[in-house]
Structures are given as C-alpha cells and as structure tokens.
Length: 250
Length: 310
Ligand SMILES: Cc1cc2nc3c(=O)[nH]c(=O)nc-3n(C[C@H](O)[C@H](O)[C@H](O)COP(=O)(O)OP(=O)(O)OC[C@H]3O[C@@H](n4cnc5c(N)ncnc54)[C@H](O)[C@@H]3O)c2cc1C
Ligand SMILES: Nc1ncnc2c1ncn2[C@@H]1O[C@H](COP(=O)(O)O)[C@@H](O)[C@H]1O
Image (tube, rainbow over all chains, first blue to last red):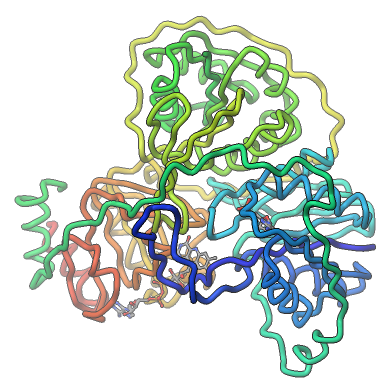
C-alpha cells in the first residue's frame, strides 16, 4: 500500500518575517527556507507506518520552484522512497494545489494521503480538505494519532476545539497532521547521503493541463499594527494596582 | 447578494462566535441567513433567530451532523449554496474542517481567517503567523470565507427571524464518529473569556501547571490557556494551546506565566487588550509586547499576585 505525502517549501519557522516596503509581499530573498513543519510530521508518520509494515512505499510530492527539490530531498533523507516535483514559479492557491495533487493521486494510486494541516506561510489550512473533496474521499484533519486497520480503514484521533474527537475513516482517505502526531526525526548523515541516490521525477505544472490561474488578487501585504511598548512593574502588588487603576481590567 | 452563516454551537448553546460571524456577514449583505446543523439543536436555532439582522434560520438535524462530520455537512451545504453568494463560518476547528471541503465542491477558492471586510469583494487576513496582513480581492461568484471571531464584535440581540427545518440528506458514510473526549471545566471557554491565564514550559509538570494556574484562574474568573511547549509536554490538554496553529484569543486581560513569547504564540494572543507577562528572564521576547512585565520567578510571583488580589 502506497502513501502520498505532499511537502511544501516554506520560510523557516524561526525566521523573522519582513514585509517588503512596496507592500507586494514578504521578503524571501536570502531567507532560510525549510520543509513546512506540519509536513515533516506527516513524513515522519508515513515513514513510521512503513517501518511498521503497514505501508510499502512513501512518495513525497512538492509543488513549487526548482529549489523545492531540496525539500523533497529532506523527505527522502527522513525515509521517503522517492519524490516528485511539480515545477512552477507561480505561487499557487490551495485550490490549484489540490487539483494538481488530485492528478498525482490518480496517476499514483495511493490508498492514503498524509499531509500537513497548514502551511505556515499562507496559513490557509485548506489543501487537505479540498483534495479530499475533489477525490470524494473521507477526511480526518488535525490528527494526533493514526492507527491503520490493514488497507481497510484508519482510526484517527483529531485535535478539536473542545478536546479530542476519534473518527474511523475508510481508505482511501486524506489525513492531515497536527503538532502532537509525532516528533519528526533528524535525518542522519548516512541517510542524507543515501537520499541523494533516491529518484526525483520533475514535471512542469503546465503539463497537467489544469486551470491553475489565481482566483484571488493580492491588493497589498502590509505590516500589522505594532503594540505600543509597555512597562516593567516592580512587584505583584504594583501589578494589581496598575491593572485596577490604570488599565481598568480588574 | 445573500449570505449563509454556519452556526457554531454544542447542540445546547449557541456560541458568540456565531453572532460575530453574522457581523462579518452583514458587512457583505443585508440578507443573512444562519444554518444550524446538529441534533436536538432547536434551542440553538431559537437563539440564532434572536440575533439582530438575521433574515431566516435553517435547521437540519441528524446523527452525522451532531458530530459535524465534514462529509455530512458538505452534503447539506453545497446544494443550499445555489441560493447564496457567500458562506461564512467562524474559524473554529469545525469551520476549518468543513469550509475548504465545501469550497472545493463549489470550485471556488477559500479565504481563511478573515479579520476585516473592506467591501463585498475585498478582505484582510493574517499570513505568516500574523507577521503580515494580506489584503485580497476575490471575484469568485460564490465565496467561502472563514472568519476570525475575535476580530468582530457580536451582532446585537433583538432579532425575530423564523426557523425553517430542512432535510438532512443521507450520506454514504465513509467516515464514522467513534468517540469524543471533551475537556471538562466550569471555567469560561478559552475563545470567549474576558480574562485568560496561560502557562508555558516553565511550569514543569501537569501537577504544577494545575496547582499554580487553577487558583489564579478561579480567582479571576479566567479561562486557562497554554503554550505549545506546555501542551506537547503534557502539562495541559491540546485544546488549551494558544497560537498560530492553536486558538486565537483576544481577551481584555491575558496573563502569560513562564512563556517566552515565540512568534507562533504571539500570533494567538497579541490582539488582547492588556497583556501581562511573568517571566524570570528580563530579555524574554514576551516583554516586547507586554503592557505590564514582571521579571520574577513565577513560584514567588503567582502567590504574591494571589495575595495582592485579596
Ligand atoms: C509549526 C509550528 C507551530 C507552532 N504553533 C504554536 C502555537 O500555536 N502556540 C505556541 O504557543 N507555540 C507554537 N509553536 C512553538 C513555539 O515556536 C515555541 O516553541 C513555544 O511557544 C514555546 O513555549 P514556551 O514559551 O512555553 O517555552 P519556552 O520558549 O521554553 O519558554 C519558557 C519561558 O519560561 C521562563 N521561565 C522558566 N522558568 C521560569 C520561572 N521559574 N519563572 C518564570 N519564568 C520562567 C523562561 O525564561 C522562558 O522564557 C509552534 C512551532 C511550530 C514550529
Ligand atoms: N505547494 C505545495 N506543495 C506540496 N504540498 C503542499 C503545497 N501547498 C500545500 N501543501 C500541502 O497542504 C498542506 C496544507 O496547506 P495549506 O492549506 O496551504 O495551509 C500543507 O501542509 C502541505 O502538506
């Protein structure tokens, strides 16, 4: 049984994001890029399931510029078997990403798509749900635990606003990873070397013949309002006095 | 133009996130209907009908809708959208789960986590953990939008809309509800509380997290939140997580205890009215956004705070 893991190349989560002066976007020049953290969690889960024998092949797919090959290499170094880059320099919207992933699913025939719940650049939290809709597959989003019952179904614990919800979904299905699903491994040096020999297919996005044109127009990207600087208080008593008399919140 | 709002509720009570989403909807159109999906949710529908500005309430009930399974919700909403130009849901775990599925079925793009409606086609939303605000315009004939509830005031009460029951079509169930673990608490809900007390990695254990934060929260009538580090370490349940990828809160008062102030945490609380930070490291980034900073060990500072509150 094959699993597909979509991985996105995004700004590293530790980088301080700066908005460009001309308000056309954020400054990505000479900025460290990494695999979206939620996708690392998805790769880790897929590799563990293969190590346990529940899956046979882990295919990592990324949609993005040529440099997204590095992101795929990271997935391969973590244990994915092979990669696919759908190359485009366009910044695609979630619906377009989902349409491309649907085409990949149809070509590859995985029984499971394991992916991140959210890309930390656009913060859309949409592609997994959209892909499930386009495929007419069930979805289990925000997963903190995944148990496969052969090729039949998956029991998934989901992180929801009130606590935890457990669902059973028939396979094939789309599962999106939340933070508590696992702690991704660091790729070892030998595995990084081995990953260099694993195959990555590259296909131009245009070859899929899909309508990927943007539906939304970015008018501007601006800085959020800054909070005025605060003060340090001397003691807890001083704090309570100020909260009562100055801030008026107690 | 007519707008459909998906209600947020627990089958017994309507959450104020619904009235806040109605406010966003009314900025788009005067014709706003509310859809209540659930089971045994008549009282919820009644409460939705009382929101000022609501034209009509639609109610559909079934077991799958009680669990708000994405497939079931989509099956009800997609055909209804023939009569609407936009669907708005609060950006709750349910809204985030179902809205993109509905959008894809309608072949429309989604606008996630909208914080401002500029006009009928232009919206503002945070990106990069709130480090940038994106103004986007959408010419989609049908819009699907999740709304960040903390960015909108709740619509007033005083409406008297009618409630219309609609059928919940049967779905071929490829997803089944198994169970649910709800974090039990008498405290206010995190997203709706006037005061939030949050704890971080500094608390060191689940026992200490409880022993230090619960009395303070109870004294203040506050909800309890946590950083990701505290949740990952098992000091607090997952639904306490505040941040970019957890809950977004904007209470009158947010007290961060032993939290460093990573951007991912700030993304979930920096719109609070007043922020207090208690941290023993004077250089902790949380102090850059705190209105009142107390450089101290929480072990002495929190008991002193309790004493000062009387
Ligand atoms: C994809 C992704 C998503 C994330 N999403 C979120 C999110 O939604 N929410 C979130 O919170 N984080 C999130 N994070 C994690 C975030 O980057 C930080 O790691 C996390 O917020 C740190 O938690 P903390 O402040 O409790 O711990 P630390 O950073 O370890 O800070 C602990 C603080 O406690 C102070 N301290 C220690 N002892 C004491 C004492 N005795 N008295 C007083 N102070 C003391 C220290 O000075 C320190 O400042 C995310 C990270 C990633 C990669
Ligand atoms: N360009 C992309 N290439 C591969 N996977 C992607 C891409 N964009 C989004 N994804 C996947 O979709 C998930 C959710 O992204 P989003 O809906 O954009 O927040 C991510 O965690 C990835 O797994």
